[in-house]
Amino acid sequence: MQGLAPSSRVVVLATFFLIGFGVAAADGRRRLVSGSPDEPCRQMTLYYHDILHDGANNTANATSAAATSPPALSNDTYFGMLVVFDDPVTEGQALPAGAEEEPAARAQGFYFYDGKGSFNAWFAFSLVFNSTARRGTLNLMGADLMGEETRDISVVGGTGDFFMARGVATLRTDAVEGLLYFRLQMDIKLYECYV
Image (tube, rainbow, N blue to C red; front, side):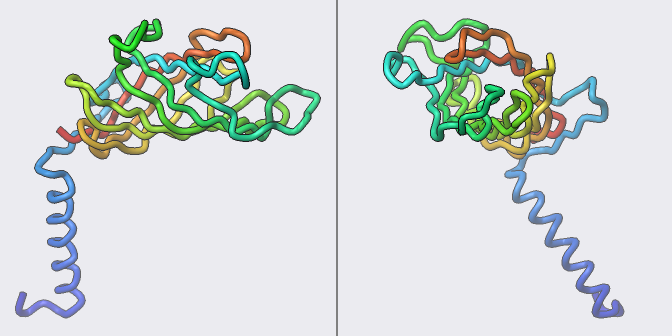
């Protein structure tokens, strides 16, 4: 590095540091970035099942609970209600039948209703995979505009098999049973993957 100006030396050293950090961060994995929205580097369809605790009768089956009570608004949007969940996620539409049947993942996080004039929510959760097929987490977040047939939320990272993954999860309401149960179809497309 003789003959380089001090500022050039700093740039060269910073470049080597960042390249070295990038390789170390990837843990020997190779980064794949999709060149087209039609060709994700990984994709899957999963079903998210939310069973809201009703306050009395479904304690054994509930997978989510309201952490706050919404203010009394006349438009029934549940504005201000925060729900914390540990929901089963399956590869098919059916809920796991019992303890012997494991879900593909668990969705752990929260959503809150944030629309005063419309029925909308905002999600932040991790899909936790712990099976022989998949291990690690995918982290998702974004607005769930429930009036739309489909809506996208961001995949903002991951661990394990999904190390540093980025992409989009397209949500579609697949089933609703009153106020206590809903199922979302999640079409997850990852556009940045490490393999």
